[in-house]
Length: 388
Image (tube, rainbow, N blue to C red; front, top):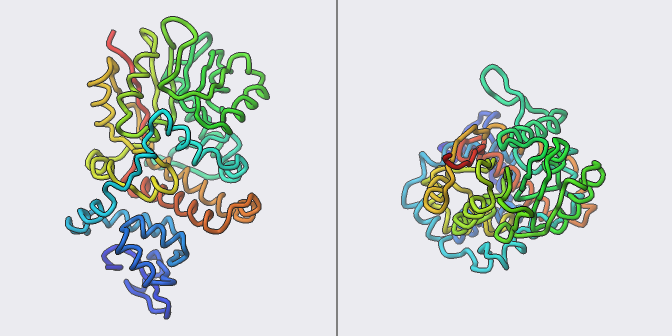
């Protein structure tokens, strides 16, 4: 099986299965019986939990997972795929559904960790979404750590340009982050209303706007997207939302897009950046309790473009235009975040976050990077408008 997955596996006695090529990613089994028990009982979730527990390791976890992801779809027999779906089906707790009362708790599970943690692996812009880097002649992103702040600002400018944000524009941002996009829009002369459910991010974004001298043009509100009320009749000239849709939850996508339609002024434009997956993969995972859902992002679901188009067509007047896809750029962004996170392991520990937390987040970053590198995930810029 190791050879079919394109990896090597080292047993506790030092034997290596799967070949001798030193360039092939190596998985080290520390406590194989424990790994087998977890995987047998809980499937992919157990595989992740086994890594958290230190029962297996890898010299290059992202390379290992990317290789496995590239081989898995073609070799896994359908009964096995069905079994892993069955094992997890129905385990999503009703408490993690992104109802209005639960959404804030789900957001805070992730985003109200110490801000210092995010500052250790994000760049100076504190932007927690895919950057867009310069590319070579073949279209490959040319990414290094020094370029990351500029690549994040370039992404923000693309979204603002797509939404038509300029002087005097009334802009709504759904999902504040730490305020980089709101500040950039205000510097263009826009009046920004930005909403978040994270207490920490709300406080940080207000401070950032004040430090940038644009607090008079940026209103940061702790608010659910379903409860947004425009501060002027007619709605907003533009709406921007960067990687917030994934956290909404599939059953609430109609609510999300209905809110956009309700809040957007006639002739207005909405620019959305969202992670996407293939439609069949989305259908297979929407009822599953995945490892990411359980430990990192409760309540969310990555959409397909088809699902977005269907939700807009059925519930709104909005049209969806695909503007660009940047999956390879997200793989590069995640690689830089992972490298910075690992380099600051001592600083993470100093925040009171133990070794189990560090292994969990190392797996989260490597797992996400592998999804984009193997092509299972993408990230899209979408323009939403209405027919005139």
